[in-house]
Length: 191
Image 1 (cartoon, rainbow, N blue to C red):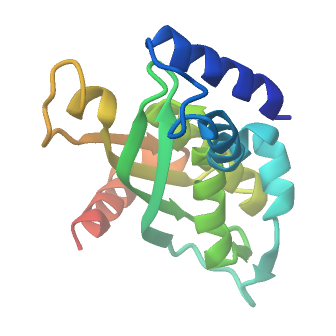
Image 2: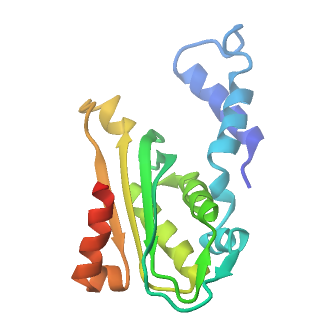
Image 3: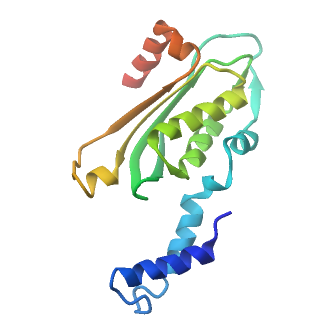
């Protein structure tokens, strides 16, 4: 669980280390506000991938077998880079899977992406986490996740390349092995 008291203490120390007065009017409540924000934006750290799969594991019978791809595009999420604690923003997640007789509620896919992002993350691992959770729920190994986003560790500091966009893909099962299916998935990204 997130230790808000420790966060408050450390944020106060950071303010001092930056050379400012943590007791001045504008900063006096900042440690509390940051602790509350961290509790919210890092909520996913309280749960494993298996926990998230249980939370959002509701599926529906397809009323017959289909091997058609289910795809949910442009799910907005944000996260924090574990290397700099910097914001990863303007992130769009696309999830595709081939159901095995049951489908996941569409809103659940967005909730999975959102909660998995609320961790100290790498964009590459976020895609893998989402794919693992979808695979657990849908009981299929045929999952693809595409993520596109901006990283403030690249845009706001260091090299300061404001227009840079990072794209990652996680391809599992038939999405990795079947080039026709893989091409169909990538064509959907252009839509």
